[in-house]
Image 1 (spheres, rainbow over the protein chains, first blue to last red):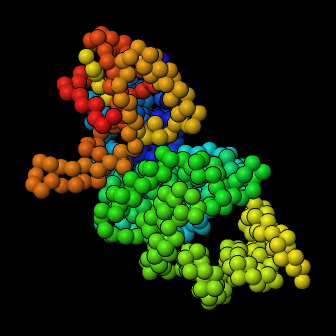
Image 2: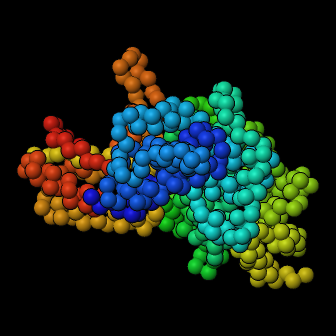
Image 3: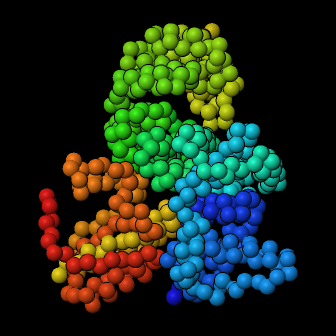
Length: 419
Length: 121
């Protein structure tokens, strides 16, 4: 029996959240659980290629990981060691049932706990993301470091520090009630969205490493949806991530310059992802419990379904941003609604809408970029130039700055107004 | 006789494939499909969206109950199917082995078709 190494890799990666979560509940200690899983993976790599993969790889890894960690403990206590698991191709019935009991009906809460531990409120967002990618997704430290554009040593330190904080705070092992479960799910969903955005805010040159983060976020969102299949907000979250990611290949040109939504080549958008997202939105709508992720997904879906930029249903988008403002009021949402208002009713009304946001968004790149665009449309060239200049100063990446600079160049070329 | 080849596999493992892995498997499967097509044996082929996109209508009650998710929680999930003309079980198994060589892991359940409506052309 030959088992493809790539298949084994994929099997180990996909089994990780559930196996690690069960081991964490069993050992109640993250380091022990991680070491146990690591050991189980090593044994899988030794045993599966010859003997074939087990029918239930996750149960195998849980069982072998548990035995290996117990074995280490026993040896430390000078007792006899357990039999060598590598000698068996699969688990016998008794062990399968033990593994299933270990994994048990609580596996939803186990995986949720594993994810929830990573989004501990004491951890800053960047540490939450790094910890989740390391622990849950199993990315290596160098992979994560590359995505965050920091050195391996700095990332190693960041993750160690995050783990320290988490273990000091204590892992919540009691089975959560319905309210606590909903609270955890919301926190975890927010973290998954953060991971996605970390990957989404790429600039051209490091797109490859960071795009990986977006893919991991989609995998985690799908995992959450498998665990909680009837949660419309998790359907919305998954759909939203799929829709944003469907444009991944078109957001930058070959020179690494940002390409705006309206200028992207729609024929290159990933139709598989778009269709899956539309199916999820369809499912979510049936529940009639609108939430922020569903509304954002619906907005993204309107963009995705428009045959061309000028076919975009801005009226509907404006209404949806209005809904989002009520569900989750924020100046950034209002700014986005203003962009839709500009398309529907013109820049004057849109500009009036965002003027009161200036105080809150004075340090926000997009605010000045959008304001500059409205002023430009209104022919207020010198004000537009000033707003765009401020946007450049606040840009988060070279690509963003370059994009605004193009607008500025257009102004100089068009207006001849070098006043 | 026509046979359905129902593809069961660990969905999350497939979702963890790299783009290169995905492309390699699809091109190998494509080669098997091309051969079957040339022999005039290939019927409809479908890959299903992830099980998270599924909705189940439980019709063992009235009115039927709509439930999110796939019909059953199983270790391996139904991910797609082929309909292929085969002379008999022997050839069906041979074809399944060719497909398996292109896409290892999981199982093919081989089921002869009782009724087949090709549907709207």
